[in-house]
Each structure stands twice: as structure tokens, then as C-alpha cells.
Image (cartoon, rainbow, N blue to C red; front, side):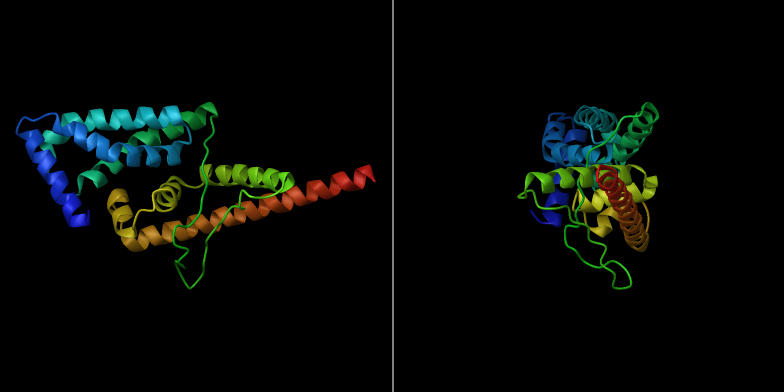
Length: 215
């Protein structure tokens, strides 16, 4: 379905829900549950936490849907609810020292500003054991880099890279201008690349020291 068909589908289900057919909400859960789970997992990196956040988001939406005005699409509205709950969960996990797991790649590879391409690609899985080990280390570094991005950059990066969400919808979810979204993603990529470069440099230095010691 195109965007207009999706919006009409949402509006019909919501209208029938408000008219008393509560089972229509199950269709909304089936349609958007997997998308919201993917988003929550991208922010949290934990299956259980992602499931909990999405379930809580739908419970809240169920009780609030009668007052939903439709200023944005239902999907965008649900992403906002999920994002706010994931923020709380993320900060709670971070205080407890729990980690997250995420892979990052640009879905289209388009330059974002000043003609600079900030695309980041992890190594292909079809490599030797040594290369796969290096790939695992890189993924761990990506995880740490994402976790330490400022919240606004992290959310924009996950929406773009993990959700493949268009800039217009990201702007609606984050309630900011498209230019702000592009700026946040560009800055997030820049900081992550700097982080990975530092980690690679530190790893090379450690490796060099190890070889010198054993010689």
C-alpha cells in the first residue's frame, strides 16, 4: 500500500475502534508491532526490554486512542510513545551497566551535507576466522559508539539506519525540522567514525606492543 492507502487504513481502524469495535486494535498491533519492536530493539539492544517497551506502548495507546486526534499518523504517534518509553528504559539500563547490540549501515549511502559521504559498513560475514573475529570486535566498538552518542543523535541514527525511515517521518517522530534530522544524523556518523578510528588506533598500538614483547 502507498502512504495514502496506509493512512486511510489507519483512519478506518481507528474510527471503528472509537465506535466500539475494540478488536480493531488487534489489527493495529499486528500491523505495527514488528516495526515498533525493531525500533525499540535498535535503541535498547535487548529482546526482553524491547518487547516490554512495545507492549507498554500499545497498552498506553489503547487507553488513549479514543482521544487520538490524528494530527500525525498512527505509526508516527506510536513511534513517539515507544521512543519515550525506550528512553526511560535505556537510561535505567545504563545506570545498571547493561549493554546493547546493534549493527549500523546507511540504507542508501547518500551524502548528507557538504557532499561528504558518512556511510559506515561492517565487514562481510564471508571471511576467514581471523577476519570474523575482527568483525566482532568492530561490531562491539560500534555498539559502544552508538551507546555513547547524545540521545538526540542516537535516536535519529537508529530511526534512519535501523528503521530505514524517511527524513520527513523522522522529523515528525522527533518533532523537529528535516534539516535538524539530517544534521543530527551527519553529526552522529561523524562522531561514530571518530570513535571507531580511535578504537582502531588503540587496537593497533596494543597489537604492536604485544608483538614487540614476544619477539
